[in-house]
Length: 256
Image (cartoon, rainbow, N blue to C red):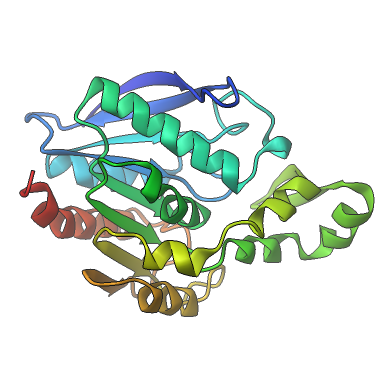
């Protein structure tokens, strides 16, 4: 694949967000995917790059970007929350619409999966939605903050260690999670849904996939990512997931 650096602005916040546009090497894109990364991760996570490589090999272009305050994007991560992530996704979709045919597929990994399930209704061009290791309830992410929840409530914010890095989480982040009702959003998705999840995921239990699948209306599909970890850190696992997504999505891209 070939990759271009791009940037776009979240009109609500005014922040400039950094993205990478991955293009098929020898063919015109047959469709476009917008990728939402996992909590505190980023567009350059190895598994995200490998999934994108698998998609571009099947002639699907991909936009992956850093949410506000992460990676190369502007803003303060401590002031971000699920609502701002949704706003970032809508801004990324607007950029794709202006420069391509718009996003056909939304893909969300972990907390990014929670974001795409919420954002789909706001992006008219989306034909299909994919979640990878996503929580059913966005509030699931608070289990990463267990030791800091009381401090956040008392002091308004706290420093927490996530995946070996330190972040500030404030009370607005926690409060915002409660405003997003997952079951109704999933029921009203109105798009084909593919749920990918590992039965041995130690971070987001497989039961989350069951709840997402049960809440969704047909057409919906579930594929078990056997023997993979939460981040799909093995290259072969990420490429496998990307190949599955490309194959599944091709039915909906052909309808364009």
